[in-house]
Length: 195
Image (tube, rainbow, N blue to C red):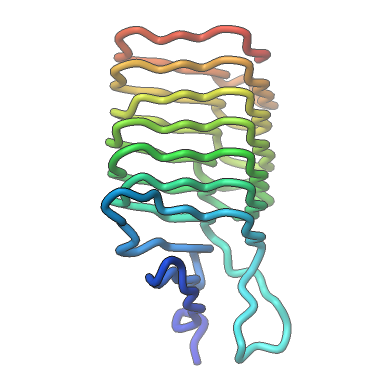
């Protein structure tokens, strides 16, 4: 079996979550009409597949929730090489709370990439990376509170927003890029951050 074919299917609320060779967890068709999709208390470092005797690192990306509604990612340890949470074209409100994200390569992308959803809440997390950037939020209201973000790249980049709140975060960057970069934002509220 090729590495590309390796996958681990996990049942979550009756739907499949997949662990591929490049992604930690992909949520597919987990939308429930009045309930949130919840990913909680997971320890994602590498997949342990039944046909492989030793655990191995497959995590190019942490969690993909593209085109998903109302996702909660809470109380997890997530180690990846590139993306931490990739939520392109999300819907509703996504919550990323009380997690620890580790990016262990010097290359990489954003810890959190979120676009086109109603709102995202990122609070009480720790993000530590040897490469890449912090949070990229586009066309999404965002509440970003009480996070520790250590990255050599840009800390937080917010574009095309209706409104956001960024407070009580500690942002550490080793290369002197922007701690917080906001453009085309109508009424940002940024206070009590250490940059």
